[in-house]
Image 1 (cartoon, rainbow, N blue to C red):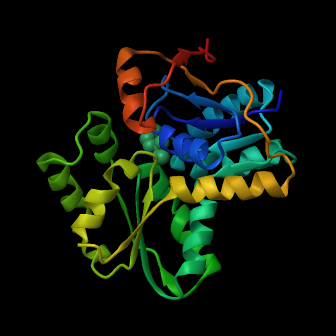
Image 2 (spheres, rainbow, N blue to C red; image 1 turned 60 degrees about the vertical axis):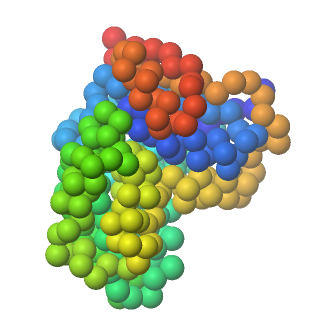
Length: 265
Ligand code: DGL
């Protein structure tokens, strides 16, 4: 049987990335791991996120994964470079770099904004990387911590979500942006609301789609793409509750079979 792709996140939000990958790469088998025992990563220290990410990657490698996708923006910001050092031969994809490449190539100059968790914003990973690739771009950013629990509770496309989104996006830093990166697993669910806030005048970039396309190209380049789908996808979480089961439907768009895997015991 062909080897699977391992995808991990702090919880079930990364299922937006898993879904985009499942759609773009229907021949690939996925093992998804959501670290619901430690959620949210956005408020955790860099050291903790690095430690969690290393343990999860070791677990996925032991499961035979041929490539790892870090679906979580915060884990991509804090843990990617260490993981690359630990596993120099393993293809490891993060959600930041493909989005950085996409933006620095698409826009010659002007402003590309970012919204993300506190951890991702504090790391300044997007401004650092985008400006390094294209010094003509400015990258204003804003942490939007309320958006994660808001979306998980199913508050989107309503008055409450509209008010919260407006309050984050109305910062004067974003007054003249041409594009906005949705730098968090959860934000694809509010993409339309964000577009509407800017009345369609700003490109809203959701990293799930960009990363799925990048993964497809990388597997081909490395010669490890599967020709035919064998076996079922697996969706594992480190702490099971019915509430995660419910939320997973929101992010994956359909019911999935979530199983608990207590890797921290
Ligand atoms: N998965 C996280 C991210 O994309 C959001 C949720 C969390 O803070 O754990 O940054």
